[in-house]
Image (tube, rainbow, N blue to C red; front, side, top):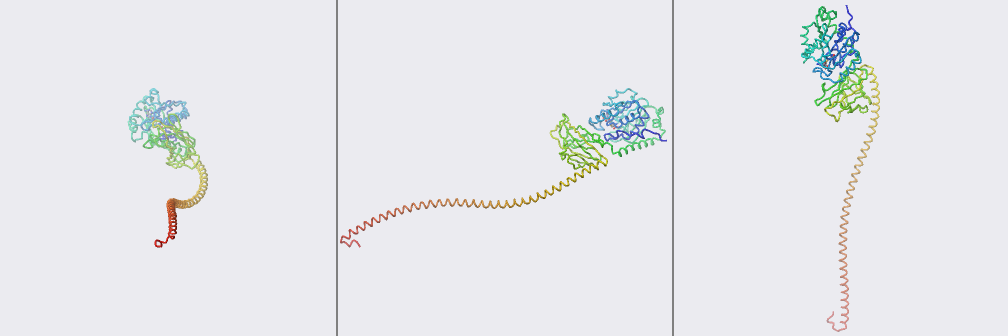
Length: 498
Ligand SMILES: C[S@@+](CC[C@H](N)C(=O)[O-])C[C@H]1O[C@@H](n2cnc3c(N)ncnc32)[C@H](O)[C@@H]1O
């Protein structure tokens, strides 16, 4: 009754890379399809972080069959993914080299250019997941259909998305009428097209899908269950990766267009690197997008042109960075640790100086994210120690502050007394100056009086001299008078003298 399909055990090694996960729910079907089809040549158009592609690769590897796989992408993005940086291709390329180099090749070119790499009728499984406008998917389907062998399978992703600009659903309505097909509606929808006649297919798994003798809803329900199993297991593991994102603002603020992302997984020290346009304000680092503990051990911002360091995180200058969003900086004097209580932890770096607006900047960062309880508990113990120390220091500072306060009051009292004394002295000084002035005036007056006295003395001397002269003259006259009287007394003429 229950067949053993690989989907029941399949556990993708690369689940929701870049935290996009639009394809995550289809990897169980991909595992069953590879198992049933046993392809020799698999080609994917549109790979980005490689969730779907590496799902196929994992299934191919697990099967152990001889198969070549090709991923075609420019790895710069399109009108719907938005433009992304070279870091995505570098990471995908490194992952491919680590796990699937023996049979998997990345073709970094446009879909049209890549057609030259494949002969007609050679591809067993073609996955179309490029740009999803009606025109683009119609073009890709018609260009690549000849490359698929008769009896081969073509997958079209996003047939259930009807938001602005998406037209795969409309193309699917046309193509599903023309070819044997099957539609999944979960994970943005996946259309499965058989290039050929359903009746002639000799693979039971595919025959059941295309011949219509099995309830299609039962098949859909089964793969939805598989998808949910993966999602729950992933979330429960606490190990699902997150996106570290750096924003470089322009004059209008922060936007997705001027940001770059890098996947980070919890529980491991991770080095991330971003290339961004020159910022018109403070760079913003969003280390991940869930509740966790984040320790950032290094951040370096460099000039894109020559690698000159513009700013570097200095653990003795942690006040230079500012936590925001759902992150709280844990008080630690030499480590930058953030506790995020939600899905939007943010860290603002200081403003950079002497920037050329045309020159990009490179941001390198080393961080570790922990989600489980033990790291939080151990962090909390460290925080308690730091807080106890800080508490003791605060008490010592409070006592010191009280002492300084007393001292200040004493100084203020002394200052007041000094001010009063100074005022008294100033008063005395001004009185002294007044006394000096009046002394000077008195001295001048004395001089004047002395002059007058001298003048009067001289005048008096003159008068005395005159008096003496007059006295002398009078004595002379008296003497003369006496001698005259004596002479006269000798004469009898008393009549003349009485
Ligand atoms: C939706 S994403 C692919 C998603 C991927 N299959 C997954 O599982 O996550 C679309 C990708 O197609 C690429 N792309 C779109 N049009 C392209 C074209 N004409 N040539 C090359 N690459 C293209 C973009 O660069 C982008 O990386």
